[in-house]
Amino acid sequence: MGDIQEVVQGPNAVHPRETPAPPGLHVRKSTICQEVSVSSIPRPDLSARPLQLSCEYTVNARPEKVYAAWTTSFDIWFAQPGTLALVPEPGRPYFFYNRDDWGRHPHYGRILDAKENQFIEMTWLTGNGSAEGTEGAETVLRIELVPRGEATQVRLTHSGFVSEKSRDGHKENWPLALEILDEVLS
Image (cartoon, rainbow, N blue to C red; front, side, top):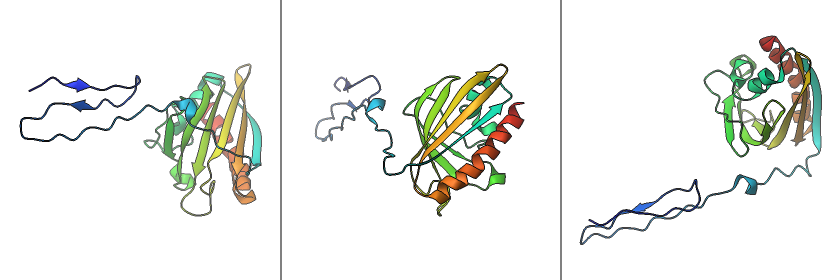
């Protein structure tokens, strides 16, 4: 048997290996997968979808606690426990189902940007197969955290809705969700 040969491109590339075949056998060559840079994944183009909403809410908890609640602890107030897959790093995908008492809806997207304890920005797709949630559109949700003594002002901007119905549904529900966040963290 011959030596194992590794082909590597980039620090996170897939590493195909080839071992010379025994005499009389043919070995198919492996395809090399190239690394994709997070910076090469485009942000959603919202220019044709100008509908957005903004709301602010003061949460009685420090920014560190609020940031964790929007990222690694999202399942203590919004996501159904056991369904959250989220790492707050740009380019990383996330998934969860919201709380069962709100009706089971999948939420998914990717983290666009984040600065610990200051803000998180992500794409936001949700729905249950009908004309609800974001109606299949990749919207953008930005959460900014502003320290206010022992509290945090949460500035939420949700952009890129395809319809007024979708925007208005979120406009009604985000303040309710932020109220629950405050109750859980207080």
